[in-house]
Amino acid sequence: MYCKNCGSAVEQGAAVCTNCGVPVGQGTNYCGNCGTELQPGAAVCMSCGFATTGPVSVAPPGAKSKMAAGLLGIFLGTWGVHNFYLGYTGKAVAQLCLSLCGLILTPCTFGLSAILFFVPWIWGLIEGIMILSGSINTDADGVPLGE
Image (tube, rainbow, N blue to C red):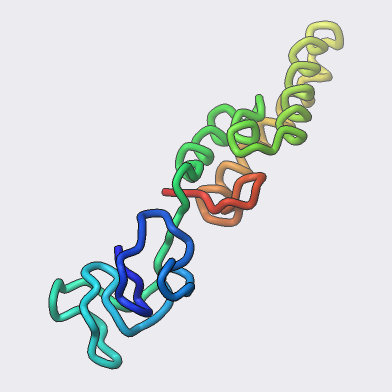
C-alpha cells in the first residue's frame, strides 16, 4: 500500500503515512496501489489499473470482524455474545441476566416471565442487523470494525 499524498510505502493497517503525516487514503497525487504519480483528475492509475476514486476503508490490525459481530448478534444475541465480543460488557451482562432470569423464572410463573427471555433476543437481533448494515461500526474502544 502506498500513500496517496506523497507516494511512499505505508505499512498495512497504518492510520497515517509516516513520511508526510497524512491519513491513509487521503490525497490524489499518487496511486494507493502501486505508488505511481497520477495525472490530475485521473480516475484510474495508468500503471496498474487501480481505481483512484472512491472511499478507502482501512481497519487497523487486530480489528474485530463486522461479519462475526453481526452474526453473533443475530444468532447468539440473547446471551449478549456479540457485545462481549465487541467489548461492551455492561450491555452483554444485562442481556445475559435478562435471558437467564427469563429461563429460570418461566416454569415458576407459568410462562409469564418468558418475555424476559425474548426481550434480549429481539435486542440482539436488532443490534446484529445494525452491525451488518453499518449503523454500529466501532467496538467499545472506538476501533473501526474490519470486514
